[in-house]
Image (cartoon, rainbow, N blue to C red; front, side, top):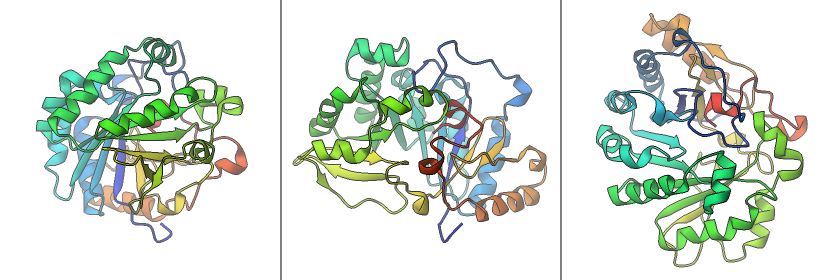
Length: 316
């Protein structure tokens, strides 16, 4: 643990997605897993209860795309009733969010992160291989109107593809109460196809955005925060390579097949399925996993992630 307080679990509900983003998902899609390979919702809830007993109070449901999963509203509702769980969020591409946001908030959803790598319809369609940007923009507006706070917008920057829109994305925070977060492209999975020529460091972007004023970041936050003068939102930079944040990392990850990844970029995973029938055994195994969470990743030395999984299998 290295003195870190681990209080956050990210739960990947599926590795499937309704988009095929160029840095994440193969164009042809992926082979569908058998039903028995995917962990059931009741087992996810068992793991969340054990996690809460050990001090985890934040849950984020991810994918793939979590909103394609049947009964996600019921899962969120049940998770919100677990003693100790105080914060439930999702990371989504936003395509289905507009029609679902109201019910998800009623179920107990507190926060949303929405992927948006371009504000131009044709470019958005090209990056996502078929997505309709209007669906995402409507979802952002819906979440703001519902009072979901904060609404975070995640943009993966790739040189030559969307780096010409950085200023436009930042300007969203001027009039909207959104938090735009730029994420450095990582050398994992499909991202390897763009990494050598497409990587842009956060420092490079900041050197060109002179208007941004630094803010104090929350402890455990992965983002360095900034703000335009008199803006309603903030701008964040997530820099796992150029400024890695391992010493503040407060999270573990549960995959859709029931394994725990204590570090996103490690090849180490622990199968929890054999402990699901014993609450004491499950708590004991999770405690050991958390205690032995790796001190740091080695992306900057290895030049690629050591993870054996693609990004869509982990949920970021």
